[in-house]
Length: 196
Length: 208
Image (cartoon, rainbow over the protein chains, first blue to last red):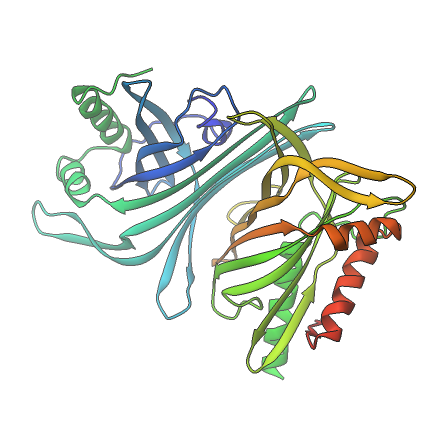
């Protein structure tokens, strides 16, 4: 599982957010990592975004060797933008990455999320609040490295759906990204997905 | 005039992608691996490559370089774009079921905030024995028959966002590879050869 989140973990230190409006997505992913990584090729994810503070958090959960497990990925800084797309409308882009190289060693990673902006309900307590953000997000997380002649890679592709119920509940309750992240992790524990 | 300017801008953007970290130039010694396949792009309107295209993908593992020739039909004509060779890192790693994957990768350097650019070129393939030349003796290498990967780019510059998600699956071209290596062609010469071949088939070269 460590290999799976290599690209994420390479990025930036975990930071708690003081205030947030969170967007919560959930969906499957396909994973390619080297042999011996003890990682399944299919993993489900919760991905949480706080666009105001440009942060994201991931929680992977899966069954492996007959056991339910989860792997919280921490909170990362990320850059965001929008761009026009063919056929009209705009895409929300969220990206991050790191590059380091001390030849012959190198370490490269990219995190990339893209979805077409639509109207999504993010809160309904005290009046409904909608945002122009994606209903669906496709994501690519890639990492490759070599150290002392030993190569490694991680390739993760996700298809995420907006989780309206979880998003509205979190924002109605005024949860920060960290709190929403902790709650999802706790809910997964209740469903039998053990923490590492 | 405005359309010409926009076309030039699109071409510059494309060359930026293909030339990520580019140091174009002829290599003094090379062993090329030639692949051919199909790709898709998802990007902003006006990008020079259409949503579906064909491509030659040429790798020079020894010199850690790759090159692309993209070709497609559209607007009533055939077009091709030849990218300059660009350097990347390469490694191998074991895969489930035995064997190793060859990884080819680049990454962009950070930009000063508030601008940002994240770019990655990433190709992966399972290594198998492939014949690469038949000079005085047959030479085989343990390299992929199939590479899958692409170019991912996300950026914002002066408040303007941009993205490219280009995916490519390519298959080993043994005859072309053996011929190129028997003729001791460099990566750049091979790109020129493939481009000329496409020109003969009616694919007009798009130049900035």
